[in-house]
Image 1: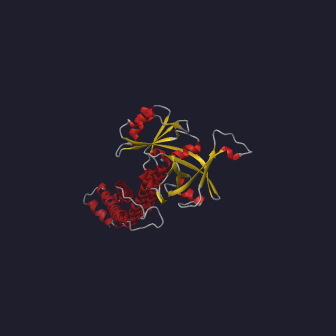
Image 2: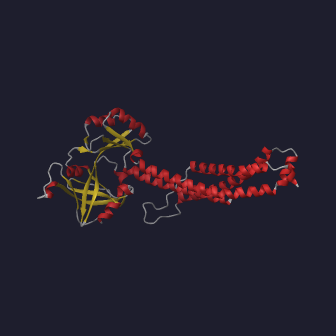
Length: 376
């Protein structure tokens, strides 16, 4: 019972921890990535026409459309230089969502007289850059309308300057290369007047993104790539899922090893109870009846031990979930993220019950085959 209890306890706690981290990352992705993203198939940029705007806003569930322009650039601060990705966003973005990602400074993009940028944590660390840094950040990119000349290489570069207003955190890939600034700044730097690389769609709460995605495909026709937030981050969700189920498989293996204790105990019980089995058979008990006794014995041990382990784990997880006893220092959250799901409880209880049943089959078969002659 103790072995199954510890195994079930560990299974619930570990699965709930994975759920907590997944919820944390998903919440950050929800604030960074749009619910639906529209890009032009085979094109880096396109124009946001009134016709396109009308088709999108006419769909039920769409509440807002914001424009975005992304491109690789070179960024320099002091003696540090890095390749980064600029993300220019317009004033229609949900500023409150982006604000929740900022861990230092504030989310401010400035105006036409003074530009600001919000930098990913990894990128700002590489540049030794932080809010309040005294010098301007230099951003440059090769100009599309000027041929490169070795005599005057700087003439072939488009250069602009801004200051850092804040640092944000989403996940490693974004944090290490992205900085966010105004759409005007990005269009001027990249020489893309009135051009954008994507449209970010916000939906009314409760609206199914897949339904709106399909409606957009029907309305806009071919030539557009339309993805939901989950499709944009498909790899991240797959990694979380694979890690969770791999860990679950390891814990099941631990339970299987623990179940051999029950196997050994039942075998010893069969040997010890040969006389009782013989008496029952002489009184008319069938092999099936004998087998049921030992199957129930093994299942009972596994289920009772597992249920106690699950009960204790549920109490521990819920207390951490609501009270946050276990704290994390210098992190984006104060308490260790954890989330209990009913499906994990059911899955763990089912796993324990099935293992208890399977491990009892052989001892019960041996008990059923015990001859009456062994009663002496």
